[in-house]
Image (cartoon, rainbow, N blue to C red; front, side):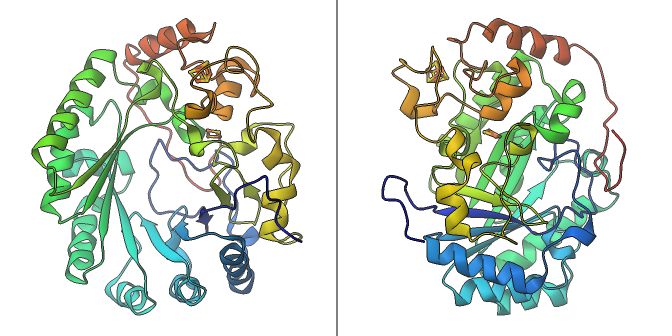
Length: 367
Ligand code: SF4
Ligand code: FES
């Protein structure tokens, strides 16, 4: 099929190669109903998908999961991506990477490695991950990455248990030799929504952490790039989720469903086409789910006439659905939403809950 000229080509792809993962992070963006190993795409199909993505215009692919290194074909898939001209970023917990596999990934021309760190203190980091020894393992993977000359990004998700150490996480990333650190406050979708009461920091804690990270950005300018995703529930305006629905990137689930974002399956009336039956380009341009909230025509007020509608695209469709019951509503994180006050009350309620127990994500876990 020929590409529609009114829709920009996709630039990025997140390949959820598997939902299997040794860790159980309570804010994981994977869906609560994790896909089973038996449903995963095989090697040949993933290779076809990567070839089709490159042909459709995709420049970079995030090899993600779950933990992508539990796939025995991860180096083979990485080499294929390099063969078809895709820039590869491995998003890994580090647990599941051994020296032999790491060397195979380097030989396969992996371009970049993104490593999650759960906290700057080992005991807390391992508790959050639900895995003893994860923190020490991650430090070792960081060392291998830097020694191999691969660019390293540290991904640090902030929430009530670690927010007091937000600045320490940035300093740890510098010590590990990272070129970039993403300090991203937990997003409340999937497992994050399940665990929201145990994750939500107070507004005061949030403001202190945001100020500390912003101060470090100035101190370490030129040393490390700090990407800072501020916490939604305490914000005035929403983020431009996915840079706008079906505008730049897409996700492919382990079983081959193609989604405009990681939480799209929570929107019940959408039907997601699968790479087993359709090409990447066909799905990107023609899938009703991709066209459902593309552009601006679907917007209701106050977004429809708002001067920020092409800045944040009305926020997040999945969050609008989760918090207001209608994915076309203004994301209630926005202070212009008539439902905004309720979000502040929710955040305050959860922050004060005192809940400490996480519901760890596990394949086959009942929620
Ligand atoms: Fe963004 Fe809509 Fe709020 Fe305007 S009203 S700032 S477009 S979410
Ligand atoms: Fe689905 Fe934001 S997570 S649009």
